[in-house]
Amino acid sequence: MSLWWEEKKLEVYNSTSKESYYYLIQITTDSPLSNVTFYMPLPMLNNTSSVGQNIINSTYDNQRVKWETTFVETEHGPMLSMRTEKIEPKFALRGDGPDTYPRAVDFAIIVFSNDTIDTRNPVGNAEVLMPRYNSTNLGTITNYRNAISYSYDSRIYAHYEASPDANVQIYIQLEAQNEWWIGGAQSNSYRELIITDFSGPQDGWVIVNGGLVTGEGTYLNE
Image 1 (cartoon, helix red, strand yellow):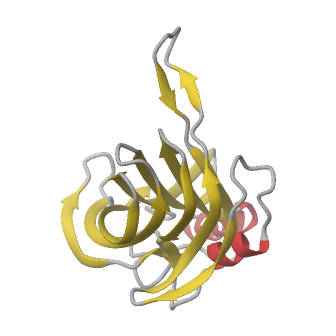
Image 2 (tube, helix red, strand yellow):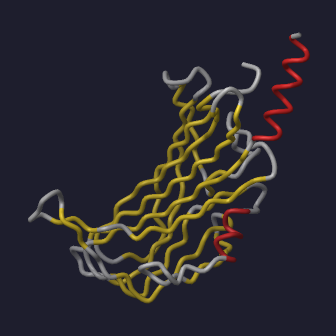
Image 3 (cartoon, helix red, strand yellow):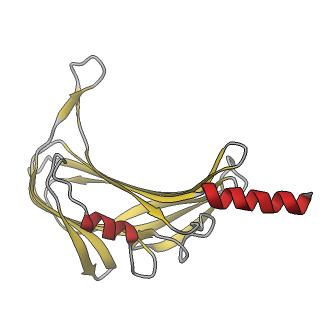
C-alpha cells in the first residue's frame, strides 16, 4: 500500500506540477530623469538566463516607459541593460489625500520552466540574481523548517541626469516556485530581494545588498 501510494503521488505530482520564475523590477522617482541607463542584476545559471532571454524577446510598448533592453557583458558578468530617453514621475493620492506619493514604473515577467527548480539549494543549480558577492548564511527561518536566509552583495550600474534633490528607488524581486496538486495546492519556493535608493544624478556602479530565502514551503515525500 505504501509503495503504491508513493508511486501514485509521484504520478499526480508529474501530471500537475508547474515550475516558474517571477522577475520584477520597480523604479520609483519623484523627479524627471533623462538619458537613463541601468545595468540590473539578472537571474542567471551558468552564464545563461531564460528569464533574460524572454525579456529581450518581449515588447513593452504598453508600459509607461518605453525601454530598450538587451544583455550587456560587464566587469561583473552578464547583466540586463535597460535604456530609455526619460522617465517622468507620476503621483497618486495617499489614502483620501491630499498627500501624494510617486508611483513605481513596473517591469515584470513570468517564465515557466520544464524542470523542477531546486528551491533548497538554488545557487549553482537554478537561476538566481547575479552578480553576487560575499554571501552569508543568516540561519533558519522559523516559518518553515527547511527555510534558510542569506545576505549578499550585488551591483547596479546607474546613469541618468536629474536634479540634485531627485530621489530614486530600485526594487528587484525574484521568486522561483514549484507548484502541484495532491489533496490540495502545494508548493515550495525561494525568493530574492534587492532594494536600494539613489539621490541626485548618477553615473557609475553602486554596491547593493541582496537577500535570499530558500526552502520555503512543502516538499514531496516529507
